[in-house]
Length: 222
Image (cartoon, rainbow, N blue to C red; front, top):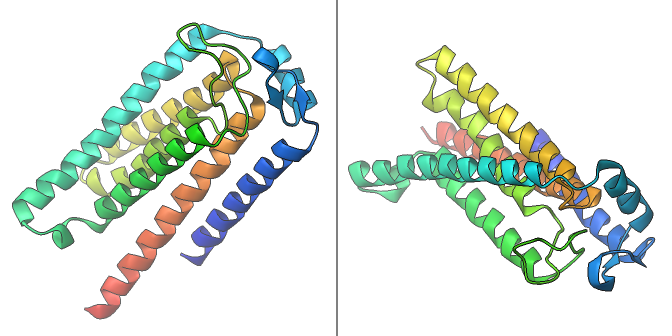
């Protein structure tokens, strides 16, 4: 439990440090419509190396929708438990904390849509001007949903080791494709992806640490 919380704190600290660096180090006008971008030499060099491939953008969007569908499945499990058990406190702790994790993730998403750290390296074909780019919200949402999903299938698919393995592999492959694909698509700077990974790792480790703590206390009270 302590290890998870320490990892969460370290990841969040690195995330905040990255924001500080982006706002103070090598800030230059290199984005579309004269947008100022932090760590510009690093970001521009990698963006030019990978280029723009909107096919990857389309694929990651599709996988992102599938990730949201997975999140809705876990939400449905919680909803059914609430209906049949007739008490919010009787819903599995995993699901209750998962709801808190999803809510916190959405709050961060909304916050960084309003508080701009960096803008996208390109103007999107269906967009209306500059768009917020940091952290990669697609990376954060997918990492949180699929990462927590890999943990939850250990419980909800425990009767079938084959199903558990298949779901874990599918979630891991989806996550890898989304993170790599978002970078290869060219719609994000490299630091957007790193920021997304750090934030989601912090959220996920905090979730797992709190879940272990909650379960330990529940056992101690019995």
